[in-house]
Length: 51
Image 1 (cartoon, rainbow, N blue to C red):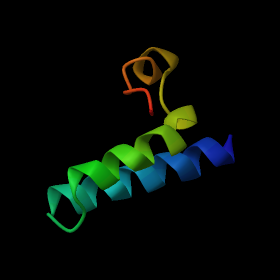
Image 2: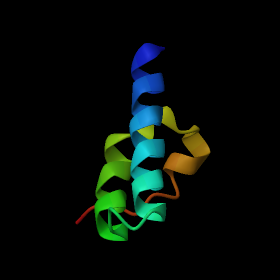
Image 3: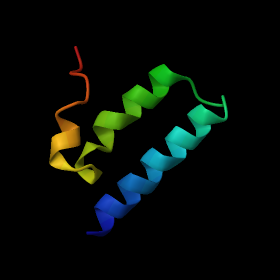
């Protein structure tokens, strides 16, 4: 599905920005739940719950 591809690209971009020290880890973790539908279901369970 194209939506999952787009979300995957957004997540990979956010990870790259974090690796390049352009984006902090906290911001990356804010992106992860938004992009969770692009992950494998078992990986989605490992994401921290938002308070």
